[in-house]
Length: 279
Image (cartoon, rainbow, N blue to C red; front, side, top):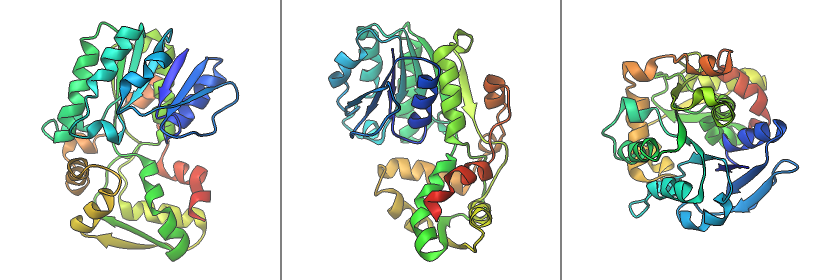
């Protein structure tokens, strides 16, 4: 049995599907009830209260651990999930971490994630760590404004980073869960090209066959929008990166191709698969 946390999200959903198609028994964990692939067990649970997952982890061979926003709250102890995995007899954990752990190690949210990485390394479990940069699926935040106003609003319109397709993150996670060759690996996951928000808007327009106007937000406007969904310190950490990425954050990583044997998918490929959200 493999447990996937965050199983209805942009990474968890394709990961759950891939594992089910590989013939694995899968338990999908998410906060709310949701549809899952045939043969997959679904368990609603809140990762901010990890001990509620003890029964779910009994007899499990592997765990995909996604650090949800709740686990960045001041009172949260995300390392409890590692302790619980050890106590439950889980043999392997694949952790979805963040590129910023290496590129911005002093950011408050990065310090917390690094603590989970360190706890995993010291746990005695088999492990792999995935450190993606920005997600292509973050563009879904623009879906409503594209549908209703033909507009994309974002800060730092001409500053780009090599954002990664969540389906590639899921494919690497599946490989790490199923293949011993990736045990002990730390994988930085990026897309194949640096792309700016303005260029992303142009890619959406091309896929729609309709104009999409780009509106540049101030940092303050962007933070106000982001803190509706994430803690302020995580919003600030993210905005620091997209405002002025450093050379490490602009680097195109070879790790997706190293694990999967193919190049990472470009942003326009993600748009083509996701275009219904923008119509």
